[in-house]
Image 1: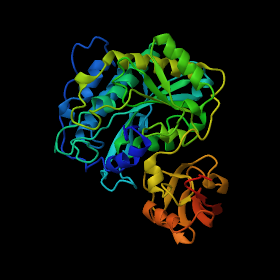
Image 2: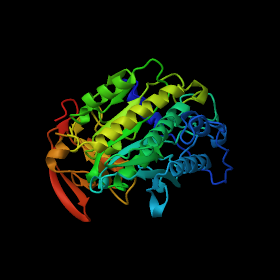
Image 3: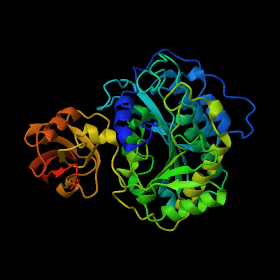
Image 4: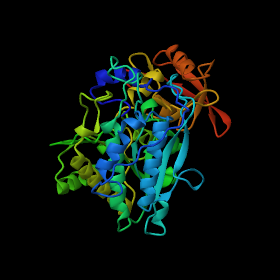
Amino acid sequence: MHLAPISRALLGALAAVTALAARPAESAAQSCPAPVAGAAGGAADPLAVIRYLADDALEGRLAGSPGERCAGDFIAETFRRLGLEPAGDAGTYFQEVALASVVNPHAPTGTGRNVVAILRGADPERAKEAVIVGAHYDHLGRGPFGSLAPDEENAIHNGADDNASGVAALLAAARRLAEGPRPARSIVFVAFTGEEQGLLGSAYHARHPAVPLERTLAMLNMDMVGRLGEGPLVVYGIGTADEWEAMVTSKAAAIGIPVALQPDGYGPSDHTSFYARDIPVLHFFTNVHSDYHRPSDDWEKIDVAGVDRIADLVARIARDVADRPAPLALRRGAGSPPQLAAQQSGDSGYGPYLGSIPDFTPVDRGVRLSGVRAGSPAERAGLREGDVIVRFGGRDVADIYAYTEALRAHRPGDHVEIVVLRDGKEVAVMAVLGSRTSRN
């Protein structure tokens, strides 16, 4: 998980730490360990998945590293064994993702890989639409960036809960859905890379989806689902669609999982990349613990039975959405964008407020937007997802830092001309800046 939702007061501090959660990827080849033998559940057995991904031999699955590559190969092979079609680049299971980040100067300069598969829907027409089920599989490597155990220098951070548990639930849900009957719509399964460096893999997939986002009904995300115990399971995103509360409550009750429902559609994990693009989302989470972002997050502490129950819940919800006659009723404005995005866009604290949500991946010049907050000055000015801000109030915007300086040079109530690149052309809009404290 990119940032643990401990409290809003701590989000900013954790963002400053985990935004640096990367080091240059190693180029040396790695011999991948053999999967754990004798797993009771066969392909996608949660215990086997977690033990493999949290093996010391993968050295913490830092995005772009040999260990991440082993993990990606393992996930792709599991998708293949489940009979899922590849949905990545050029007929493969892999989607190459540049790991450079405009908000993380310590990010690797190479590439990581999303692992993408699809279960085709049974209905010939509705199969063109999809539900995304996802979880990130990268972690912190050996630190030190992002680690909350700075005294344990060069220690492997295995990330059994964060997020081998989410990948185990992803694959277990895929197994349940692949066993049939096939849902009417397609299900896209994505194991994301680069989450710890700023949601890079999910942001990339949202721009290059296996199924166009205008035909995507929902995104279900699992991040840190390995400590269920007696519960509750925290489910974020309930406020992003009218149907979520009744659907989640009834299905969780049928399985016997207590749930704590939260409305926010934004948060420190990959679902944010999709809610910012008007996709209803759910985010499943079993809460933070003392092993978070520490070398002690190991497989022996995982509630494997709980992971399997959560996978059952996610599979049932995915099937329900995929089989329903009509799309979900989207609700915009459920919560605030992540603290990191707000800080880096200059929308934190006091002073002028625009309501832009910057994309974390670089462009040749300017700042690309992954979305705007509902009802914000940015939305009222006509800014939208995909716009690249190149001038702000007469100042050229070369990157996100120049954008921050340009925004902070103004005051609430100022009328500001913003020039964006849209479909290859410069478009100028006028925005009236609001106040961060009043958000208007």
